[in-house]
Picture (cartoon, one colour):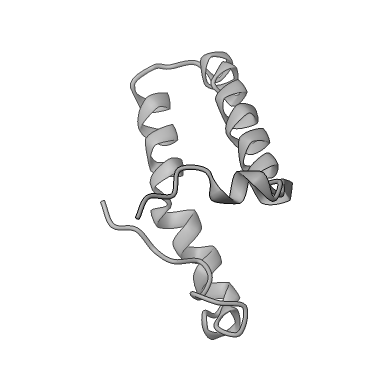
Length: 82
């Protein structure tokens, strides 16, 4: 299974990947979508798949927290070794 970068490495590089190509790759080759299709083919029900959306909620909440949180000044010097 191959992976594909949907966006560039930086804000300025985001425009380098054609949106239509990115959409096609995501639709045809996205690893998450491929696993979903394989699970459905193996007779896993939609209901069972929807239960796993709780995992996505937890991951998204953790990512949001990480992106919006700022450490205190004291925390900036935690776990620094010389």
